[in-house]
Each structure stands twice: as structure tokens, then as C-alpha cells.
Amino acid sequence: MIAEGQIVLFRYPRTDQQSGKLRPALIVRKLPGRYEDWLICMISSQLSHEIAGFDEIITPDDQDFKDSGLKLTSLIRKDELRELYGRSRQRPPA
Image 1 (cartoon, helix red, strand yellow):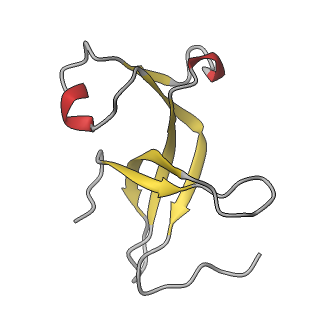
Image 2 (image 1 turned 180 degrees about the vertical axis):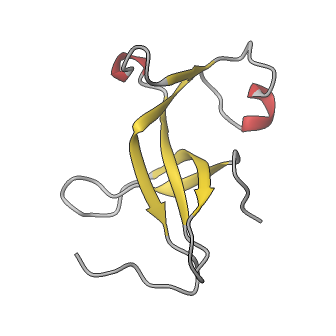
């Protein structure tokens, strides 16, 4: 079951619209409506992409790091939001 605050693996599309590889994402919130759609936020281990004062860094020293499933110090990229579509719904055409 998906819940807010959970870290999941999500296949982020590449900029050329081809399937990307699985990447971690933070479940931010369930979107309103009848479908099981969720707002998610990208997580990256590329700390050089940090927007100081905006993004959040998660380190192994954080209390809940072990439960996150992350292996490295990571960056919650608040500017990288996506919609995760529920199982009973198809992604709308581009």
C-alpha cells in the first residue's frame, strides 16, 4: 500500500521520452479524485544538483534513513515533481 512519506521506486522517463531506469521517489501526497494517483518527488544521490535552502539532504545519520531503503546520502529534489498514475488509469497522451 502506498502512503505519504514512503520512498518507492519509479521509472522516470528520460528527456527523449524513452523509458528511464528505476529511481527512488518520495510519495508526497495522494491527488484528489477517484483514481489512485500520487504526487511524487525525485530523489537523487547527485548532491551537486542541490538547490541550497530549497532541497533536502538525507544522510545515514538521519533517524529514519535506515527505513528509507536508500543506500547513499541523497537529495530530495523538491523541484522535480511527477504524477504517479494509479493502476486503473492510463497515462494521458502527450
